Image (cartoon, rainbow, N blue to C red; front, side, top):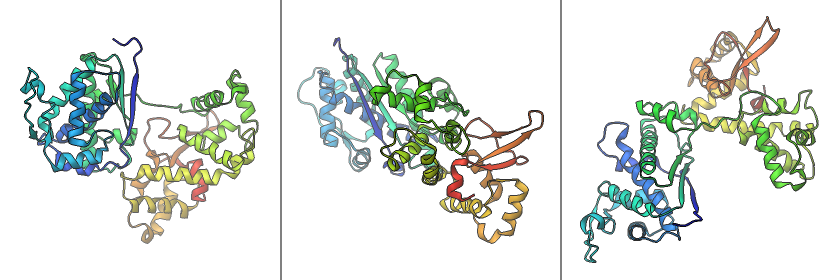
Amino acid sequence: SDSNPKWFCTLSSYKEFNFHELIHLKTNSIKPNEYIAIWEWIVLLEIAQQCVADQTMDNIHKDKLSDFLDKNFNGLKLDMNKVIELTKKKGIDAGVLSLIRLNANNSSDTKSVSGTYVEYIEDLKENIILALKESENRYTVIFDELDDKFRNDDIYKSNITSLIKITDKLNDIFFSEDIKVKVILLLRTDIFYILNDPDLNKIEQDGALKLEWGNTIRSNSPLFGMILNKIQKSVPEFENESHDSLFLKLFPQNINNRKPNEFILGRTYFRPRDLVTYLNLIIEAYPDTAYFGYKGFLEMEKSYSSYLYKEIRNELCGHISDQKIDDSFLLLKQFKKNEFTYTEIKRYFDSKNESFKSIELEETLRYFFDFGVLGNKQYNTHKEKNFFSWAYRENIKIDFDKTFVVHLGLRKELSV
């Protein structure tokens, strides 16, 4: 065995993938499992590509995989939309793979066997397992941007459910065969939680890793830790500086009488990309500055707010229609309040009923609460201060009896 194993990792984007095309390749299994076979085929093809790309692997099973990919998909690098097109159009020629079963003595008179993809999933899997059993290397395939084409419809939900289930099953098989392969799916939690399948709860308990970046506004937030680590790695003079002193150097000023971490985090959804986007806007506007000053944050707040608005809009896409999203945001813009009670907005909504025909107020407020456009505020007389509840910070439901507040990061874009 190779004493210096390598690690092959592929990040496969499914941003442009057409989930609806898979209707033509579903099987007769009970819903939502009718897409399990085609996703198994897709996942195995992703792994087969890694096997073939591994120059250190040299065995008959790898050669078979290579021949199979060449014969059916013109080799590497497979575009999965193209794979679906070819799988749909013509029979798969998997004669090279079937050697194991048809012809154990490896004679050269292998017949070319053409059939549907479903007939050859086992052969493909078997060859991958046998090829990888002889390798000390590690292989990881990451499925990214699965949520880009999200629609809250049965086809999409069944697709993603099938993909999650077959990925879990294949990971179990590879683990039990002692093969160093891992398939990872990246998915937003709001999508995962609307999938309805009894197996998913167990899969989440056993195999899911939830990325969380803290849920309170504090100076030692993991988000700032990530930014400071990044800076230390790329700026040698900061390499041995403590995080506390580096933070003071980079964020030396209060912003609108708020501590910098309070001002910034209060305008994010506690996600790395929010913080990075805000800082990048300042860097672009002030390329020569050595620190992030209050002026930059205030000047770039409108641009940042536009970014955050687009992000939320994209996340709402698929959950509700574009028309409802537009009308819901229009309601907030025209209402022009950053704090209000349910009674106040209901009175306004009823008076403007003609303008907002596509939406129901309660549904709009629920979605806005669940996606962090709105939070609840309550004054605690005992502690003499306001407490805010946000769905992205804690697992809570909307309370119509409490005051609503518009997220700080969206206020500039909504002009409230």
